[in-house]
Length: 548
View 1: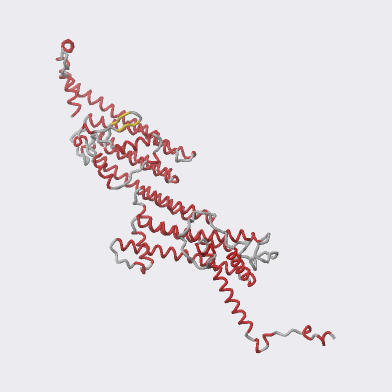
View 2: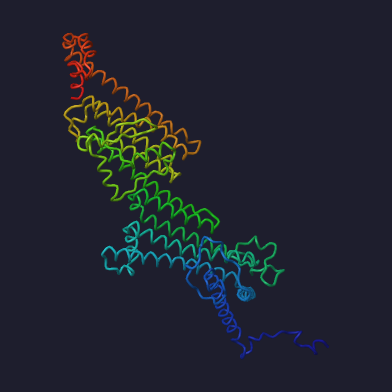
């Protein structure tokens, strides 16, 4: 009876077999794809415009400039009621279609594309501007990638700073929005599964309005994956830009390298804050650039110091107020603030300091002062101290390279000691670029003063470096203690040489005059005369021969 009354319960008919409905299924599938595509585009556009003025107030879903907010502020996750309902409605529709995973993939792809386009556009524009300002045609905007890479490498440092500062602001603005989207989804309990997730939809079975269940946190989130992918792409893009300028950055001044380090490190820290992981690639690139800068700077310092020593005439030079202030900072424990700023204003002071005493006049000579003691120094010694204090400033700012800097300072100190020993004690200055006629006691005395100055500041250099090194690496400073012994030994050799010179003068040239001098008569005359007594011929000859 049931079979006769309800034949449809006995047999089901496939509507697709009917000619009139043969293509309805395909049409419905196409319509569903179109709806899903439109919903996905709307959701992606909303996510990408997050944080902009329009996107955050729900005026429309269009993208707008990201320059109107501070990316260092906490990402905004609150939305107006209308906009929140709209976003949740789109997500619910995609969930019903089972396409939340595809929406997550589309969002990640679009975010990475936007970052890539931003990087390319900014770099290309900056390269074109740099080429135009340097007299180029300004048509580099359509140049191939190779030309753009060359343009980045040939930018001036200020032009590159303008480029990366603009790039950092735009990239962090995009990632700021991605962080806000991820936080919004977490706070609302919305879960967009990543492409590799085994879940069929983005909501817990017990929730119908898009709030995640107890186990949904075990699956990866597409918003978090998009943020991680965007941060990774940003890190690689900035690292590549820095690598293109590795050679140029090794030749910049300390202040230029410090500014590059500070700007890049600020970006790195903000990137790590957004992504929740360490940007090891960017950090290693920065460290390699700083290391290359220190190595190139040390090579230049070594060659400059050798040239200065070879042309040194071993006469006193003037110590400017700027250099004395640098010495005072070192001795007061503020060596990290010491740095020489390259510029036209410093050329004159460096040149004046290099003028020997015979040209500047003795009344203009200023001694170096350390802890109340005054020292007469030569130009090469001042140059050595400036190089050492610049290296100490490098160790303070690039603390990861402090161990390398200790070795550089030791090499500079050893070079000055060994070279000055050869030039003065070994009479090498007679055959060097200085072409001295002879080495006399005056030259020995000025070298003694220079050594005494270095010995006076060595403890302060050691303390400044110790402050930058971890406790387990303090043993590296033992090398400075050995250098202190070498300088002390050098000083003793000079004193022995001075005694030998004066002894030779007395023994070979002045011994006959001693027997001919009546010291008792001179003493009686000295008591009677109120005026200054003339120096006896014996002592006058000692002074004259010592100055030769």
